[in-house]
Length: 93
Image (cartoon, one colour):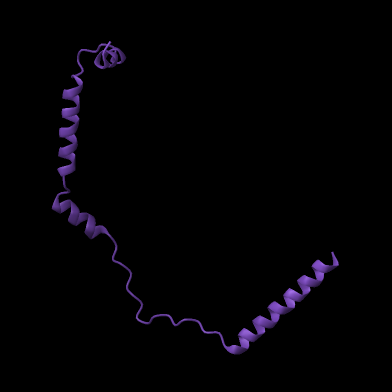
């Protein structure tokens, strides 16, 4: 039994199916035809015209946030206090 015999057995011996070489030629030609297909210009223009306009760029760019030295000092002291309290709680357990 050859490779082709096994395939025809799987197909159920349907005689209306083209041989494998013809089937693949047809698949390849249809695939190539679909690859070459392009969207008509009027359809492309309708699609592009229906898209919303991009948002306008802000006139003024946002300034980076700067923290004053006083605020940074308060944050550092608060973190030290939290660390000390956490250390005391963990040491007690």
